Image (cartoon, rainbow, N blue to C red; front, side):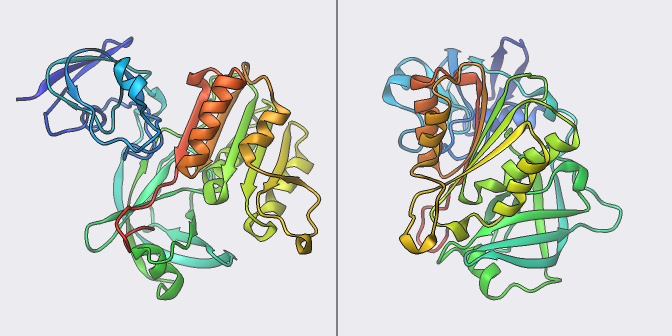
Length: 343
């Protein structure tokens, strides 16, 4: 028997079965709750349960603490109802009119951006376009039924070809294929768009973007969208990587900063060696943000990278820099846990 779920403060309601996550049931009902990874890693769907019983499910370590569980918090992508419930959540109205679609696409071009990073250009069928918001992701549908999620690196106004930045995960079922046997003109199936990681254009707050590795992909889409829309809010982009070659599109980002005075670009490297000749910032990328912005109380932050970076940034920015929790937006890159299945 399905249970009635009510959302506050909107007053919207929907039904969820006992074996269905609250997030999936809401999406099936056409109600868009914030989410990113859909597997308990990023924390984007975290909210408070005001009434009712539920199974919290399996969140990844650090994403939902024991103290938060005791205070009635849940990850809606993991939680399943055990009774009628009332939950507290901000709905994402900007997604209401964007349909999720399953489409074939052709690999139009493969471009090696770094030793372990590939740019895929995906061509949709003639007269087809994928409507999406800058920062969202698509799923690649593999022949064995598994899915692999990748952020779209192009802005919506530049949608003739979809762009993905793929980092090679050794042993990864999909990325091994991309880096060894995939050829241009191969056919793939995609499903999307997904996610609530996109620029909130109704805010006037200055923006801090934090990218780690190929987390640059959705940040790139957001920046290009903002520039195309002539959004004049101050924007600072921090891109963290290990070595200079890992900043695989640093020239593009530096060009944005040269051409637009309201945008700054700050690359940060964590594994610099003398032979690199690096004279820029070093260390952890979120620490560089804290050095430059000890007070983030008036800002918005958009962060994309591995879960450890996201959680460190979320915790430190809110606890030590005064960033309101509701102004931190994130997308965490995760890999399948089973050996040989990631990527």
